[in-house]
Amino acid sequence: MGIDVTPVVDDGLGNSAYLVDLGDGRGLVVDASRDLRPVRAAAERRGLHVAYAVDTHVHADFLTGAVQLAADDGAQVIASARGHREFPHVGLDDGDEVDLGGLRLRALFTPGHTDEHLAYLLLDGQTAVGVFSGGSLIVGSAARTDLLGADRTDELTRAQYRSLQRLTALADDVVVWPTHGAGSFCSAPAGDRRTTTIGAEKAGNPLLAAPDEDAFLAALLGSLGSYPAYFSWLGELNRRGPDVLDAPSAGRLTPLSVPTVDRLRESGAVVVDVRPVSDFSDGHVPGALSIPLRPQFATWLGWLVSPGTPLVVVRDPDQDPEEVAWQARKVGYDQLAGELAGGMNAWREAGAAIRSIPLVTTEQLPDIDSGDLEILDVRQDSEFRSGHVPGARHVELGTLANRAAQLPARPTVVMCGHGERAMGAASLLARAGRSQVTVLAGGPRDWSTATARPLVAGG
Image: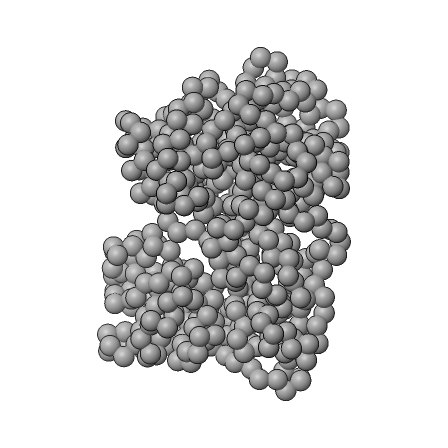
């Protein structure tokens, strides 16, 4: 039989869920996030009712949608018995199978990314069609093994090596459906391929070319960068099970008056301004944090805002409040106090204080060789090493809040690749009391092109 497996890609988190048509009006979903809108749309297009919700591991980068699917659709949740989840599910261990009514799902214990990780082999009769590899084998790499702490990293990396050896013993034509892909902080190389085959990975995955376990360990750990702060606590929420939401109300933002927003700010709420960089530059609520609404919004919210913090949203009228709400909720931010009713126009009309952060072009940039200007590059380590402006100081955006007080007290221009992260960094500096801060429109390569000066490579 032809088997219909549809990837449902979250470009912002760099992950894929998979919807399997079981051939009788029922569907199976693997690694769905709590934002079920795209999964439900895919199921509706195919006329499927989701009967099974399968998780490969206790996710650190998004809240599972399995609990919500069980509540709303009556889906049977399938997950690793070793995960000690505190919500109803069918717990599988190595070799256990689930009869899907024509197809079968076989659990393969594949620890490494997490210590309870299962891959699932999809069988049609005795033929292995494909494997949902989760965070074990991924396109061109393997998922990171350092999320459970430094004291477990060596052990888990060696387990990952053995898990990959087990998976690559499958037939070359077996399709590999990984959860983590390009753009995921769970470790995935750049590229547009989201699925692969066992044969393709054996031929082209550099980690599989490692001659032994020690070489694999060095190669994998050497490729890892930083990861968002929320990864450290989201896994436990997934083990306990996310709260079930009322879907219509969960996607709404309550309108808040200017005085109400002021009271919430005074009591510790964070104003998250999701407008484009240029709008934030022109004027914003004092102390607001700039996180423009784009596919990566959820990642930076989870990196820059402490869990449990009440959030007040400021947006432009043409920005979708439902998108803001669901991106926040899929990474565990349910304390959505609401949004500033009328946006910045209402704030201005009320005569409330407004702050601005200048946005400058390369041509407007002061002389970087004078020594009077602090150049702050907030990109990731690998980006900075690939080429940066001479004399730039490097502090990743995710660590800036804890290091702002250590920066020299002089005029500072902040840069990233395009400007979104730089404005987020500038808003953090403003929250820390810094006033002489500007943001470069564009990035180091724009500066190099405009000045005809080379970038500096390395750390």
